[in-house]
Length: 238
Image 1 (cartoon, rainbow, N blue to C red):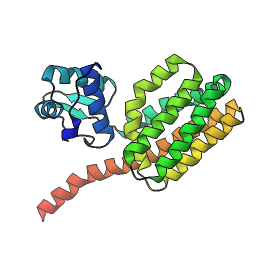
Image 2: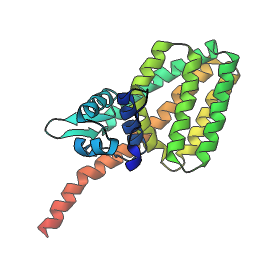
Image 3: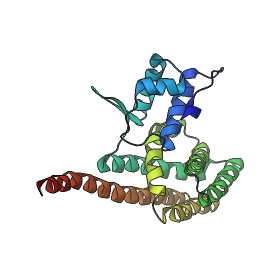
Image 4: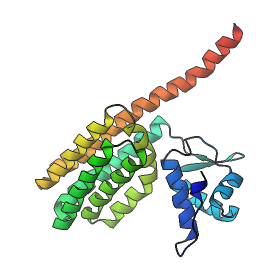
């Protein structure tokens, strides 16, 4: 954890703190539900508590952490209903992004998307979760750039943190990596054909498939969590 310490430079110190904590959460150094003890985090980052609280407020606004009264900040834990709501919004936004990309992207932006997809395929063959999440973000950045709608980009940015946390969960499921690559390939091929309807449909299909995986996994986790206390009480009664 010592490598989380930020380096003071011309870049805003608060921005460095936010990015360092965000990366640590996305990489799984802090797990959903983990309590973020301010004193310990300040020591890890070598920053003041005031600066840390400003950074935590931004991460709370992004939905990455939650500040619980009388307990303090914890890494956000999403319910099945919250995850479905996130995916519903993401599906609508990315469907629009796919359509607008076909209609508005320049030749260079089309090439950039193809390059991003090629890099994604290579990263997915590796085992580094961090690399997978980074290249997936690069792919969507290229898709959004070609859509030429700054409001759409801003709305996607606002849910990016939530999506990334859920994406780490879905991509870890057996078989999901190869299916994800195939779905993204459908998007790229539809864009190559300049078929706006097909690109939009492929974007929505990709998101909703990920939603189904996440919902199934989270439902199983919630069922297991609710059953555990019952088994414990039964064991104590023997």
